[in-house]
Image 1 (spheres, rainbow, N blue to C red):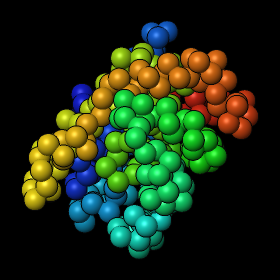
Image 2: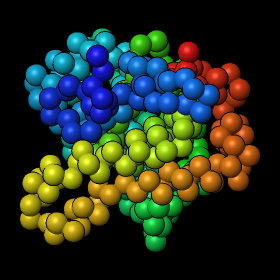
Image 3: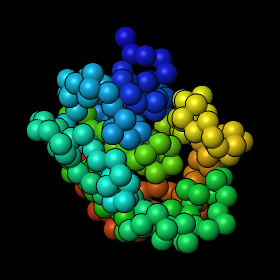
Image 4: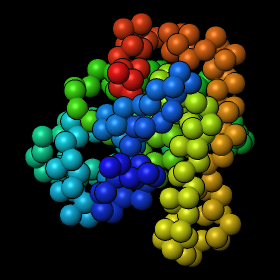
Length: 240
């Protein structure tokens, strides 16, 4: 039986979950144990790392900036495992560069900013997912909420998941992170911590509106350089 909140049992992670079981607009459900999302794997305990390795994951895609990886290297690069590890930064080369590009953007429209201004990087990430070997694939950033949340929302959209379910998947990060982050950053103003982990459902609905303005998600993906076969492979990750 699958955990109803989709959380994965990897000790040390706060925001790891399966994108399977979501309802689609045509009455189907997304595939289980195919696409997984999480926060930073550097947080795994030794037991959690063993659980990750035993789960059957074939590929891990690390969306973090190089400066973030330098601070907290992936445990997959320290020991030999059968899991294929790939790094593709979703946004710009550095955090400072992205802050300058996205300056002033509200959380409710952050996804739209990425779709407009980080298209080459987004194409590379989606190509990496589409061409990965068979077996469960996990992608992650640091908190697993924004960069990871955007990729999850795009994949769920391509799988024709009901819009409310996509929005709820994104917003779930707020619930999963809030208590732990308030403890982790006890010296920071609690209001700032809670704002940092806030993942408003409106962010997904605005993203879906942006995609409609581009002719739909398939048209958008073709416009950023993905071929039809790649788009179909992406969709097949979550749909039989």
